[in-house]
Length: 126
Image 1 (cartoon, one colour):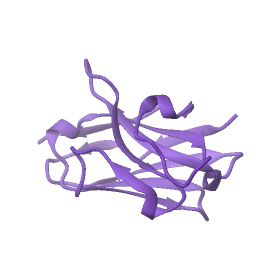
Image 2 (tube, one colour):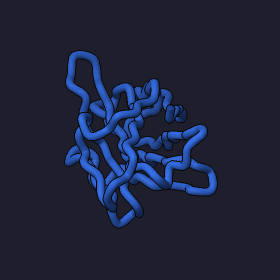
Image 3 (cartoon, rainbow, N blue to C red):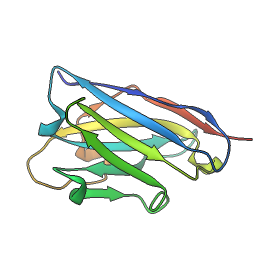
């Protein structure tokens, strides 16, 4: 079974940056669509970004467009989420998710993905 491990979360001041990593074991992420989602206390899980076969097929939620960038390093079998200009409302647990890739694109919905990591906490506060 595909195992995903997120890392890179932490406490950062507003306006700061963090880079989250999603690493996989036993399977090549090249064969999967990868998504990043987040969930704040008392709120529904929100789609942040997903990537299909290449950066051409990267999609972002409205609240993070222009600030976050998703990328894949095939050599390291890792997907990254670069988060810049962080705001307090970005505070949440961030999860990566995967689905065997059947097309070039992806869909930024939790129900689209079948494998999930345990999450990493991101807190944006002064």
